[in-house]
Image (cartoon, rainbow, N blue to C red; front, side, top):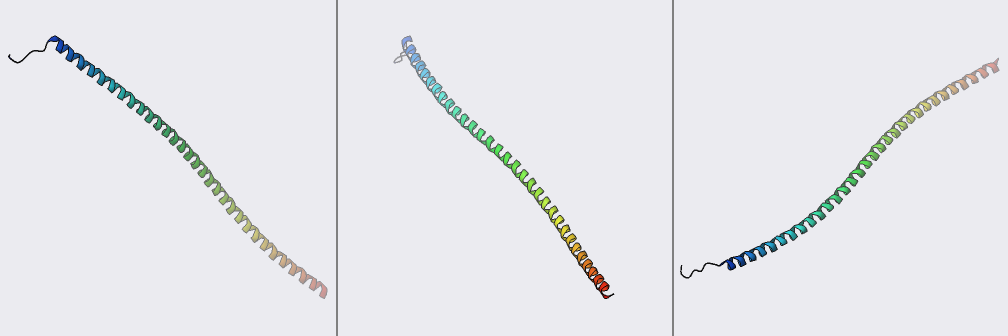
Length: 121
């Protein structure tokens, strides 16, 4: 074994300490990186929660708007029906007024004929 010297315990110990220090440093960097990622995830989660609340509020507003539109449509339907009924009543009243006018005209003619007959006697 010429030219080959086996490392002594001190060299092995030094190498082990250096490797351990590097592992500790690497671990600390990983822990820090994880903390930063967790903070980012927390911020992202908070943002998603805020959007969720806004979406819920919008959904509530859409629901209220839908209810209002339904009520408006019902109201317009009622107004339309009332208007239709009033138009029918007005038509009936107009027909009644026409009949009454014709009756009054006939009565006036009858009275005029009666007066003429009475006057000629």
